[in-house]
Amino acid sequence: MYLKLVPAKTTIPFIKVRYTAMLFSAALIVGSFAALFTTGLNFGIDFRGGVTIEVTDSEPIELDAVRSTVGALGLGNVNVQSIRDFAGSEDAVVVYVEQQRADEIDPGEDAETANENAQQEAAVAVQNALRGLLGDDMEVRKVEVVGPTVSGELIQKGATAVALAIAMMLIYIWLRFEWQFSLGAIVALVHDVIITLGMFAVTQLKFELAIIAAILTIVGYSMNDTVVVYDRVRENLRKYKSKPLAEILDLSINDTLARTVMTSVTTLLALISLAVFGGEVLRGFTLAMIWGILIGTYSSIFVASPFLLATGVKRDWSKQPAAATP
Image (cartoon, rainbow, N blue to C red; front, side, top):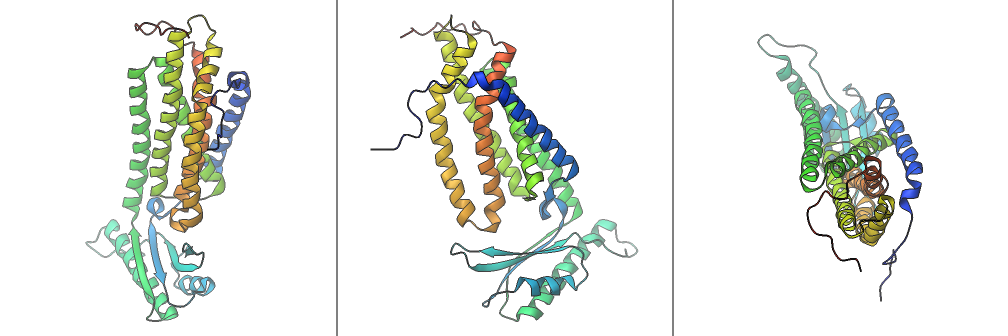
């Protein structure tokens, strides 16, 4: 015996609510742009530059004491967070210090080198201050120093990676299907990326390098969902030559609905476990993936499929013979 989340055969009229879905998507996109241009993304150290130091101690660490100790160094904006282990107890403390710039540049030394030296000096100063607070039992687990040049390159390369992924998907779908399918898939992908960025702008979750990996994964997942539906649309266009296109789209979505829901639910179960038990380090990545799975599943049904109806995909685009109607 097993639990059926979705019946094997459904007849849900998805296309009938396409205009409501369009308004909903438009509201999400407008809200995302508004949040991005007003609040902006909360860039982490990967993109903003700065110093990250993770420490642990045999005794519980008081966050307020760490904040006051590091803040007294005069290094600018300081953020202190605790990392919890799987049991939920405090396991370590992470100190984030904003990007440092050299007050003076020695003759013969360029600005970039001077700023990198200032970053390294800040990292040493923070470690010494923490050791004075916590004692010699303190263990430094990780030290990351990211300069302004590296952080700027990461922003550029991250944006390039997402753009190239979408462009390659466009070419792939264009070669495999008709141009209407290709544009529909890309519209859905851009829709997902914009709304995911908007979610990060609204929630102010840290936008780090791992989030770029999450967005690329979301692009692949959303495209996979869309291609599954499009494959069934192509088959049904060959099979039912007299049915209205709207009915064919509804039929195709319902044919693949059980597979789509089961794939999404099983993936979400794993991601929710990571979000709950994976700790602070994995939380941003897993929350981005959870949101991406939800919005990707939504877009494959309510964005990519209705786009075919709006562009009027042809029925006779394939030279292959039609399958026999049961």
